[in-house]
Amino acid sequence: MERSILHSDMNAFYASVEMLHHPEFDGRPLAVGGDPAARHGIVLTANYPAKRRGVKTGMALWQARQACPDLIFVPPRMDLYLRFSHLAHEIYMEYTDLVEPFGIDESWLDVTACASAAGDAPSIAEDISRRMKRELGLTVSIGVSWNKIFAKFGSDYRKPDAITVITRDNYRNIVWRAPASDLLMVGRATAKKLWTLGFHSIGDLALADPHILQAHLGKMGLILWTFANGEDETPVMPDGYSSPVKSIGNSTTSPRDLTDEDDVRAVIFLLSESVAARLKEHHFAGSLIGICVRDDGLAWFSRQHRIPIPTNISDEIAHRAMELFRANYTWDRPVRSIGVRVGMLQADSYCYQTDLFVDERLREKQFRMDVAMESIRRRFGHDALFRGRVYADRLLAGLEVHGDAEDRRGGSEDSRSFFADTAGTAGSVFTDSGGSGGPGTVWPGSGGVGTATDPAVAGAVHPHGYFEHGVRVFGGK
Image (cartoon, rainbow, N blue to C red):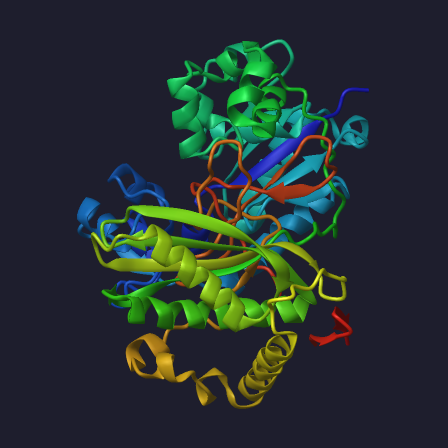
């Protein structure tokens, strides 16, 4: 039996929820974003009057204000959005238990088993759409197809408040004619590379020799070929499924431009402490250190480096991050945003090969210092203890980064990251401290959620002990 998959996307979700609670703003352009005065964050989402004026999700706040001078900014209220997301999830669960969230505002539903009792898949989509408007006051766009990728394409195809059915008879006329950038997992870097190779549409990808795509894009080339041909067979995961954590990272937009290495070092140490604390809470250590840097002109880059010994020690993470920064930043402009992440995670109890030139006793002391510092902060608050190099600048020391580290699983498109994709290379997504969490996508044959790398999607916040070095092993407690 061919599957019946729906993908439901709540239109302009954060902004739509805010409009329900602010009827006085009806018809006026509104955006949900960070704090313009503190330069925190970006436009998480905008309502349709704002979008018609040129405001786009992912814009810096000042850019949005330039596009629409009378734009109304409201701060994000995650507790409110999560409540509406939960209410929507309850509606979906009345049709099937195979409901897989794709962030806070989107979900896949496999209605194959219930299609005969509740009607065919398009009828179920229409019923869900009516109920969302009647019970929650929100509109949804729903894609209907036999696989998750085309269902997701369908929900993006027409907005707002629309249902698009993509079948084996019409997908060539609908999907294949769309730009390659409209396919899930094709970010800006990949789209640019595909364009230079002559693959302009999804149909071009589908009809290409997969070996050519693999030669230029690696494994990602084969994945995109599979997606374009509608051959993705990834199942919709049941309610309650949680994919493994891929990496842990944090980023922030500083309240002022960073003009020298001392400024950058202070912020990197703050971020590294946050990431190291979250690694310990998850009982992880990682072998890949990555950074992302954005200058005041909003140009950005990301770099990563593999280390021989997995770590969750803040000093080691910070020093590796600083090495990456020094090797790759030329100081043509001041720095606006920085992100730090640790990937290639493994259990902190996992054995590792020691290095003759690494002082394990020093690593033990650094780790215990981290544990003591985290314990003090849990008891007395984060501001109870700072490193001297951070405390020297009280403005930077006050950055709100300690609660924002993200464990990467899945996500939504209502906030934006700036860790972008590199063609053929998987990466991770970081949330700007003015917003909330990041994307995920399904890899064919994986049976679960992998890490998306496109900066044009991002998503929901996820939840956040320790190890000690003994007998050359990370030993869990």
